[in-house]
Length: 277
Length: 122
Image (cartoon, rainbow over all chains, first blue to last red; front, side, top):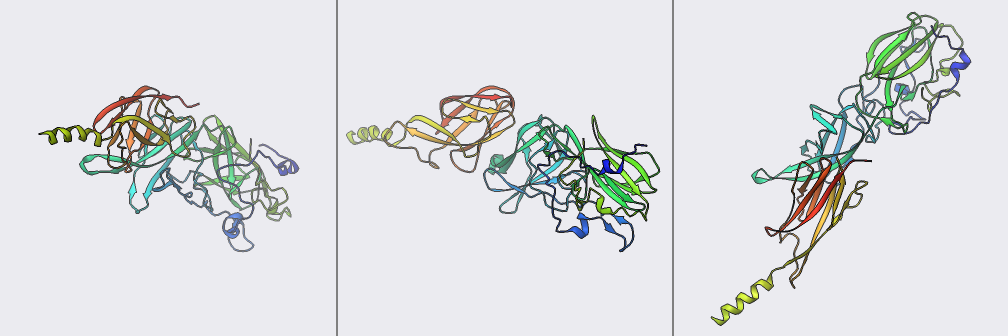
């Protein structure tokens, strides 16, 4: 078991926050996401499952319609938010995603990558290499001809850092009372510390067993339940990348307020600008 | 007979005659993109919107929408030139690193060829 002194756990473990999925200082939906919800006033704190909200669309270079990024599954941090993120600036190499185009006359088109060596398109799109790739949309013409209607450029980057997040906030340390449940998600950043969109398959582990347990795999992460007072460590792994967070489980009658839960961003030790590593 | 001969002399003067093509990248081109009458260069994987213009050597100018202009890549494994619904507007698509040439076809006649290079992304 990894024991982390309380004061040390309260330290904000930070890297520069930036990027694609900005953490939100004020949560207009605080009762549903910014704070863990409760099962009834004095009951345990139970996080809601992370909300999935497709990012804002982006107009094509020719301005004849909009490209809409959507998530291939519920593990894409580009969509895992109560808030509508901006159109992803960067997608993880290996990350899967969906992309559609809606012309201004409301008709739909399928975007095609300029090179399938760069972004493959088999059912879902998957970034294959770092760098920029144009996504092209065509209009059919009479006689089987076609003209290029619109396009955008997507940027892919290699993930170099894994980060854990809870309730739209980066997670530095997790404090739970017995019977509390936290929904923790994982995502990646590149060498510039920019958040990366795209579905990636993290694996999660929690050690030691006893103080806390993974009760289910939720959208893009896990649901952790506090079982008994003690310390545990939750780790998310993606290939060579991993991120861990210490979990302190407090007795139900422990006076330590959940406001010291740095993941909620409500205390003076707010880790909303922090990350792991 | 004299009138017919005179008419025959005048007809060619009523048509534009190719002198030069100009290419210009639309605003906000991708980094590393370059397109003009002398050379096209584009990093692989990217697309760039270009607008063409034609200069006539005769006293009659080319008219957008009237005089057909086609740009055609010699090697579409390297570079594709796609027309748009707007006359004389094209999208260059860099498919693979390499060199090719873009044929400039005006009114069905191949007038010149612009060297084109697709380069690796930095």
